Image (cartoon, rainbow, N blue to C red; front, side, top):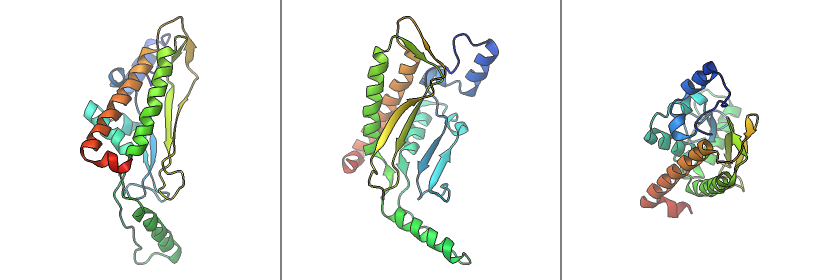
Length: 208
């Protein structure tokens, strides 16, 4: 989070290295370092049902539309797909695929609007804290957001937001951490736009 991931005292070599990783961070106020999305209906998912996105994927967002599309993907599950058995596979493998197919058939997929609404609520609470924060600068700190993606789990709509990585948090004399706030506000605006579009499509009301 923040417009930069290096401390004010960093040398020129360190600054250039960090900036070159994702120059767009100076505009957006954050970058995505990675994500695991439980989406067994997606052809990219592993045997455990997770689709994994690495830091290079996050650095591929070069403009606002790409950024919004990336966020949508992190909160989307593919529409129901059947993953059937194949000839020549052993009985155990076929049973595992059948179990996976049954889990997939039990949810309709699409953008997880209920989760996005809660994500927005927790982001607003975080923004309120940082607006009052006049003591600390959070450099190279991150937001960890976790939600339950398995429709068979009782906590399917549970989600939590946490601030992590405090190794480079330093005290300062007054003023807000404007870079961090920029990132939170960018996220809030993008989530609002996504939810408005879902409402126009009639999806928001269905999910809530």
